[in-house]
Image (cartoon, rainbow, N blue to C red):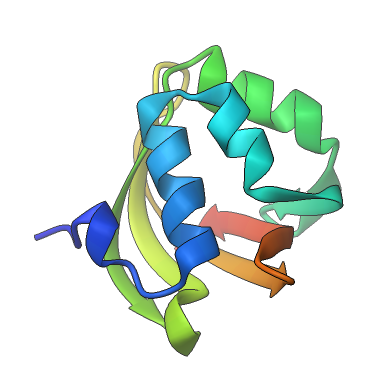
Length: 107
């Protein structure tokens, strides 16, 4: 059973997941630090390009199964129109209430 987004522990991660699931680009960008970075399956990626291709252009959606590390480490089912659904893990680095880095990959 997924954890409801409004019950996620870390406020920055909660806002990230809520904006991603709502396909709200403005709210999503607002969760990120200006110089935020990310990686997918261990490879650093261009954040803007990845977000466009994996989230907004393909209707990405995240259902969180579990969290630890104060809510900054998630296991979730992620789906989009390109790849379908897969079990993923997410790690977030949060500085001053903004996500400065996130790392994702298959769980």
